[in-house]
Amino acid sequence: MQSHMEEVLQHLLPASDIAPQRLHQAMRYAVLGGGKRVRPLLAFAAGEVSGAQQSRVEVVAAGVEMIHVYSLVHDDMPCMDDDSLRRGKPTCHVEYDEPTALLVGDSLQSLAFQLLAEFRLADDPLEQLEMVRFLAAASGSRGMAGGQAIDLDAVGKPLTLTELEFMHIHKTGALIRASVMLGARCGDRLDATSLERLDHFAKRIGLAFQVVDDILDAESSTATLGKTAGKDAEQNKPTYVSLMDVEKARAFAQELRFDAMESLDVFGDKARRLRELADFIVFRQF
Amino acid sequence: MQSHMEEVLQHLLPASDIAPQRLHQAMRYAVLGGGKRVRPLLAFAAGEVSGAQQSRVEVVAAGVEMIHVYSLVHDDMPCMDDDSLRRGKPTCHVEYDEPTALLVGDSLQSLAFQLLAEFRLADDPLEQLEMVRFLAAASGSRGMAGGQAIDLDAVGKPLTLTELEFMHIHKTGALIRASVMLGARCGDRLDATSLERLDHFAKRIGLAFQVVDDILDAESSTATLGKTAGKDAEQNKPTYVSLMDVEKARAFAQELRFDAMESLDVFGDKARRLRELADFIVFRQF
Image (cartoon, rainbow over all chains, first blue to last red; front, side, top):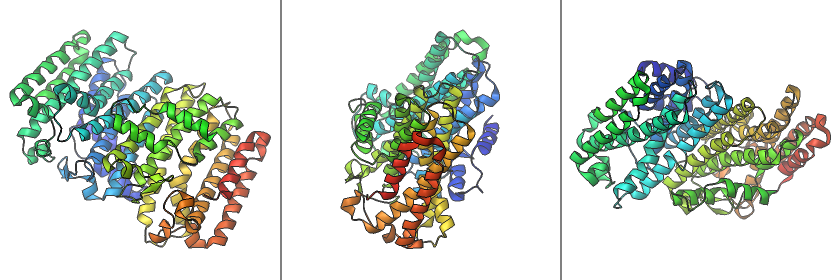
């Protein structure tokens, strides 16, 4: 699947010989050849629940991944986290330069919305407009970008668990929800209860993803992680590990996984891949 | 009109008491209380050609203005033009901080697409999806952001007039075209020839806008301009003035205005406001 997704992204990104060449090369550098592709995987798995056409989910998966990568490129910049390693490679502003990294992020965001509007993703175009709206809301100041702002404000401050959760619901949760909901919306129309259950799954697994990220950041080496490890503690950022300790954070991730799985019961075998992904997210080692 | 647009933007931006408050305050700071609102004005004027509903054009006008402001906020950042004054006020990263300015730009871009997908802008939702696609393409690496990349590459290099035009067609031209085309598309469906004429008008007037900008930058004071004047020459950036001299640049702007006006003939009195705007763009003093 990851290699298929790589081909899809290769195809949907502007070719590196189209002007402005350096920008397009940098966009391809940032997006291609790395990453776990968790959001595309979630979109495909959610698409199985509604019997979605592969070609539609591919566009949604590429869109959410481009939004994700744009956020990584901007977050890594010197004025934000100032990170030099991402997905095992020099970060975009290190490999290219800061202005290019800024424009790579900006252009990937535009491209995501261009793709979501360009291809036919739902039988009903009003449904597709709702998909565009959902992704935009998940990406913006009341979603992912807002979560990043809350994160910046939190450096060096004591946060409660509730505040930490509020941050993550925005910072990573919103886009993970969008991956699941947009993937599912590419297929047969689901009733409100089914959509609500998928959304609950996405919320729980989004939070679990972040809890596990915090555990891995605290315990792994930079080599295993492919990005700079131990950064959170170094920057005195509140994490699930710093607020709960590792054992309690592990138990919390299990609890979230259980709750997420339960909300999939109604879908039977159609949700098999969503269950596998939930396990991957909670049990992953990198 | 500008004061009505201000109200529209006030209303469509997230309130400053919604979390994350500081980000929302900074978004409002960047967007509200300044600017010529040329793109919204173009959208409204183009909407008159197709008899568009005011409420629809308001959303399009807000969307293009948010894209424009996001690009200003990012362009002003230290890693780009490093400018401290914009629309007569401290730039966003000076008034707030760099990470906030980065997120303000990112969030304004998301918000533009959210608005364009959220409100009903065309009778046919497929037409509205095409509007979203058009704005995204105009904003991205083959539009505005790409123009910025070409501009960065051009600093200190000798450019031909053709290369300079190629840059501006992207950097400012694409979004000006989007303002006109999306404004017009909010109304009755126009035939292909009419759309082509409007597009030609938008291309010519977009270029004229840039030529006049170059003249004003070379001749005005910082106080009149509301942004740092003389920056282009100081950074050794190629401009129409440096490549043509002021007199030839003025004649070129007139030629573009004439060509733009001619393409409006077919619309008769419906294009009155577009003509007024073309005059404003070419004859403005700031």
